[in-house]
Image (cartoon, rainbow, N blue to C red; front, side, top):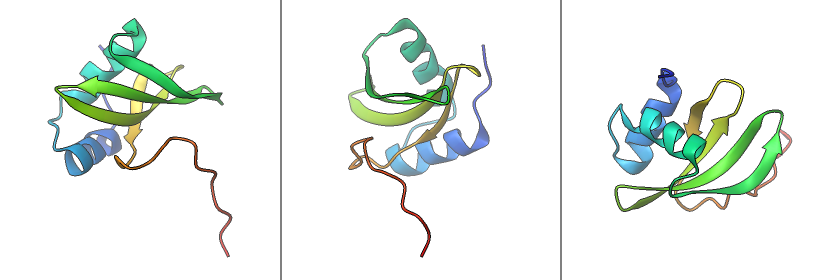
Length: 87
């Protein structure tokens, strides 16, 4: 089992109220394609997934090479926003 990043655990807790085990369980759900839908294609080995986890719709960035959740996006995000250049 791959250990989650501290950042992912923190964001899942702060944005969705989930515990430390959530990142590991969500990563496994993505690998098994169980209650998980890819909402943004892979870019540099990372993709955005919407996962149904304990009756919550959770939006995460998953790294395919590391096989772990890197971060959780805010619930209102669509997973398709472009990055803004700093002004």
